[in-house]
Image (tube, rainbow, N blue to C red; front, side, top):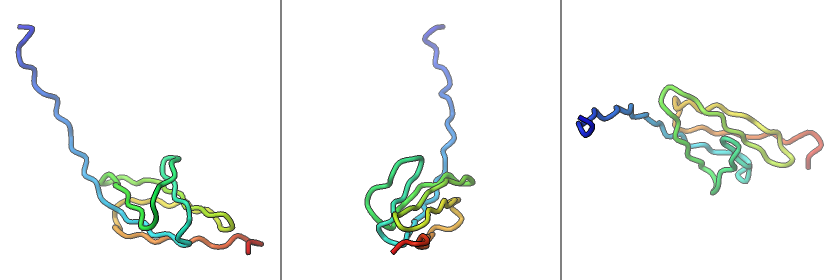
Length: 87
């Protein structure tokens, strides 16, 4: 009948792995999916198990680095180098 119980769809639970990102200089901006992350280091990201996410770290007077976080290392530290000519 129309009101008979339908089986509920099964949703596969996505396992997440926490990754803490430390940055230097400490006031460097951290972006993920085009959104600047709030707060300060350490930044915490939930990475789906078996996947990776791209995070960008930047600061004026320093270079910009793109980092792939895949959950294999729960603590990641990224340092930026001063740009040529930056004081």
